[in-house]
Image (cartoon, rainbow, N blue to C red; front, side):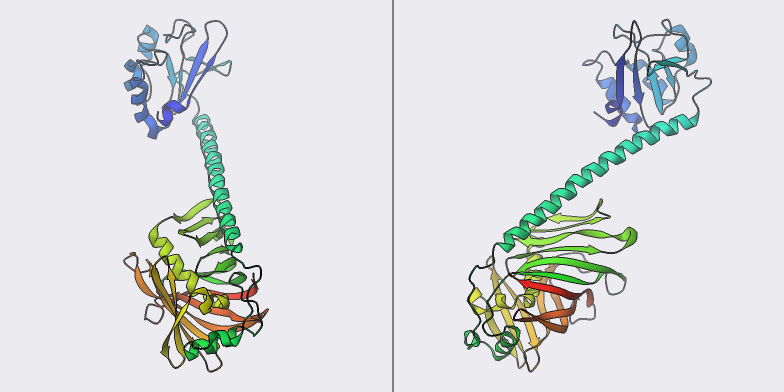
Length: 400
């Protein structure tokens, strides 16, 4: 049934008095047809002879006096219908004309002297407040479910951490393209346990829009990363009335992007599509420099030569090839990465392979790993449309 019938409230009274209050808003008058359609199943509802009267806003007073219509008084916003205790609908014989029973009291509602408009506003305001509270409660339940899923995914990735990892020996990378050897020997101190999961704290700026029309917002985030198996990124973006939070992630075949405004209003809710999962794989391997051990050949990664100072790391993920091209300096310090990522960040809004990349502006060492600590990255890397929407600085990083 429509919202009109859901708002019917009936209450029995002593002796012959009973009342039903039908609260209707102007946009819901079409639901009166549903009242009429229920006559066979619910003879206690008023008959169709007064529907047109209500649609016009007020029953004919003479008809009420003559008993031709049930006693209906009020306005199109609040309608009071007086049934008898036997379940039939009274004319005005049992009560004085213009009187409706409400909450046990009688209130003058003469159609020639309708209730003040303010009382209608209070009725509407109460109804809207109820709807708002219900909506907020529903949104909170959804938000809680989102958070639980993100936590479960985080735990699943953390369990990938090895208990007794092998320790790095520079001889392990012999035979790789020279730029790849240079990078791995720079990134991993000899004797460091080869851990392939990291927890990262970061801060910076996050841009919404594109190169020609965008705005940057402050960002702070916590992330778990296990290339190429997945990640969970939990950021807080923006300030004031534009505070956004949620999570972005990939675990197994499941990827999602869910963000909320002020923790209440859903902004983006996408999950479970092959396009989203393929795009998320690109992000996972694109951030592998934060977990250098994940780029070791022992993890199934193959390296291809590209140039004097660049090499390509190739991942096979669910039977599909994904690769990042890394450029380093003479000492092996990473300068930039670029990959072909499956993305819809284009004017057409369609998923396709397009360049995504980042420049590494600073590095730092954490427990034997030298990783990017300041970087800028985004879509269309290396083209005129490049927009480095992600600008981050690592605050801390722990390899599990």
